[in-house]
Amino acid sequence: MDILAARKKAAEKAKAGNARKADEALPALGQQEPDAPTPALPPLPETTFIATDTLAAPVEVPVMPPEGERTAALPSATSVPGSERQEETAPGPAASETEGPEPQEEQDLEMLSFLLGSEEYVIPVDRVREVLTPKEITPVPHTADYLVGVCSLRGTVMPVVDLNRRLGLAASARDERSRIIVVSLGLDDQVGLFVDRVRGVVRFLPSAVRPAPETVAQGTGAEFLKGIARKDDRLYILLDVEKAIGA
Image (cartoon, rainbow, N blue to C red; front, side, top):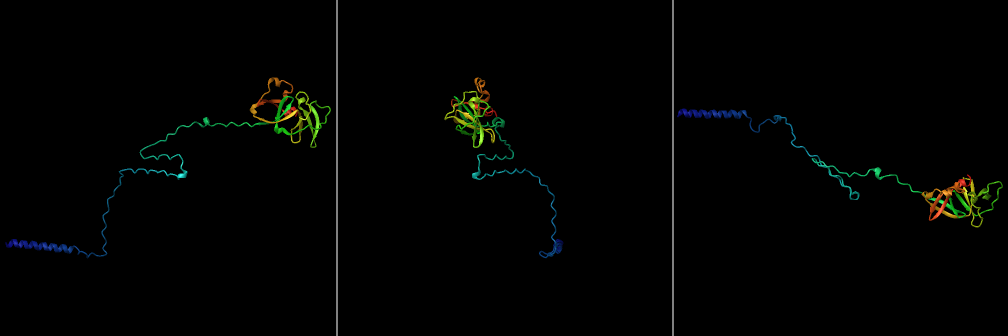
């Protein structure tokens, strides 16, 4: 019993001595030096990020214009990732099939109408300066038979041509309805055309003018004609002024 008690006491003594040594080795709690550096943490091991999914592309949202500026056409649908959409456009007709040169409108011919016997003749209005009642005409000897003579018009001597004789018709009968049509050949050059009667201004399209019939074209004075035109059941003979006065 003494031996066991001695061993137990020796063990307790050794255990107490070991505990005292451990307490001396460890610093007392709360007595660490204030300036002692904190030990650095060990570095983390290198890692690599591996993406497990692909981010979807952002979806564009169309911006609607103000209400007053909206049109019938809507913006095309925005494509969604993973789907494809193609717009179908109806083929339109070629420009050459629908568009062409616009036809030009014809301008009316403005003509002055007058009578020689029973036939009605016309000359361009832009060649006419004025229409006069017959004045005193002075004959000129040794001239063509169709040249009636000359007369004074505001200080200018103007020859007067009898169109009936010029075209090979019967001579004009001078009466209260006879007129002298003053036509212009230039700035200061003018000639009087003695006619039976002046009817007025008539208008028709250039497409209404036709060549003179063969019977008329072969008659006397046919070289002075430019054609014929019919309007409202009336027949007009176009006179070539330059040829008629010998210009």
